[in-house]
Image (cartoon, rainbow, N blue to C red):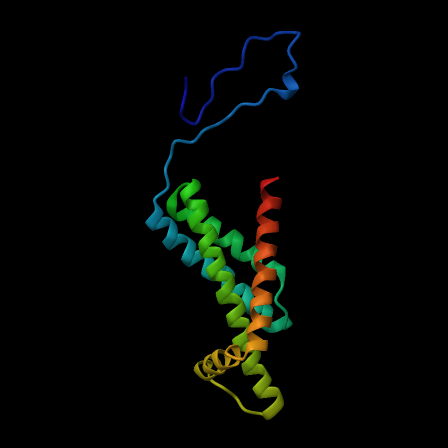
Length: 167
């Protein structure tokens, strides 16, 4: 029995057998390097995060293309760094995707606060001031509810996109 990348040979030709349903299972025995996978997922995932924040800032929306970019970059980064994507890598990548989605929604909210102050009051804010104001605004219950709703929507988009990729 071959347990590497290859498979066992199919059985000899039998005219009574339905070969259209015959599938070969390829089992990889390569384990991922979790530390390098995490580093790769973070580095490459930050590119997807930056894309999503810029997209959200320019278009002033939280768009599902950004979540797709984060999913692709985090999983791809883990694969590049860890050299394989096993169950451990999928779980770690899923957790990092959720963290990146949270950071993306928070970053877009921060830029929206900065833009609102510039548009409404003519006040230019530094990123530190916008961060402080975003944290202060999120302490208000109604804004926190909207923020958490956006998080839930993006989490659902992430799940749907991941499921679509597995089909």
